[in-house]
Length: 571
Ligand code: ADP
Ligand code: MG
Image (cartoon, rainbow, N blue to C red; front, side, top):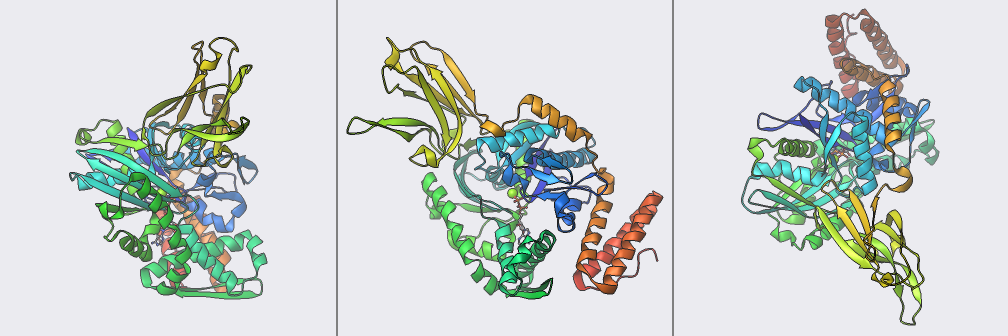
């Protein structure tokens, strides 16, 4: 069984292809969304998902989130007494999803389709593969997220010829893709992205209101305060969408601030962010050579598209109502499950074929002869143009600059700029050439970009036919097989809270957060409930634990919503 996984910046989901359709898998807490958060408990055990997310506020030094942003980089997160690479934190999330799928299916799960943002670089894609390996999952396919969203909808539409635009506004990225579907063949025509724009930025606007309204700047260094303020802003953002307005108070040392906004004021505040949504859309339309009016459908994906002002904007942008038959934060996972179904050659999917594009230009650096006869280096020579259908293999011949030259350096870059210094360097390869007859024949540089978005570079010296290969390993961020094995061993040695205790851990973490937020009698009351529930847990009486957990949850919920005191659970 191959599972489909949406490994998101904010939330991750797993889905399976079952009984002829994609099915979302609930986690141990019964939710389809598992927050992409990892924490270390006070007794050294690893917490993943909701329980860890609750502890972001109370234990910022022992909890990590948003690590997808650092995939493919060397940046590590320190949790308790150990540094974790982003691959490892992602692997822990994947392991948790794998366990959920195994519990759901009643069988072992060892293969997965994992989605990645369309703009993920080669290094980021490789890091995602490694994360899969570290979680004990063979990554059957890396699938672009907007492609997955369209795949989930493509089946639903089942129509003849359609051109979609996928508008995916997640927690931290905005991806736009234009896809075309005809006779069951789906092709990605173009994709563009702003990877510094997402739902979080809208919540941050509300965070900034607190500083504008009286909280001093130095409170920004107080990690616990900041996590709490972000959580307040996040729920206010949702309230504005649901109820048309929101208001909250925050306090830091002796300063206090009130943040109150209605939908109109929030939209005005959000205007600069909303304006930024245009840029990737225009670029994708231009690359696909499609006018907005020619689109048959606009598909919304990503939790942030639940905001009514975003939906209204999308409607205005394209002059039509977007498709919203599926939940926007679930479509990518559903599409991943469809791809998994395709991989398993499910009968119901026989007609669907998928093609994708390379989302950025790949090329090499060259030296140019100037008009005055001198040479200047650092120019970009594109080999694979952005939005070429993959898999693709392109070859281009390059020549030595001088007759005495003994080696040619092939630098590999990703990007759209004219000068290589403005693009991202992926790797380099030095090729020996023999000065002498045939020297001037140069080298053939072949770039091969596969369906997973992985690049291989092959250089052949024309005179000798000798081939050298460079699998892009993105320098220092690359993990060797030995290193992966070592990390796998350490990860396996970590104690992870068993799946069946996660729900209770999440409840306790939530109560601890409330304890820190409340004051006086209420705080004392929550403290009592925590103590009581901890004692219940030690009885190992499953029925009693389940009963108390339910009462505990209700009591916490009522305190959270209106401060009302429910009777002490079990009292
Ligand atoms: P990612 O793909 O980054 O993991 P998701 O698609 O799960 O993210 O979207 C997460 C974002 O969606 C968060 O910024 C969250 O605030 C936002 N979001 C989810 N539900 C709502 C809602 N009801 N109103 C506004 N924003 C929401
Ligand atoms: Mg997403």
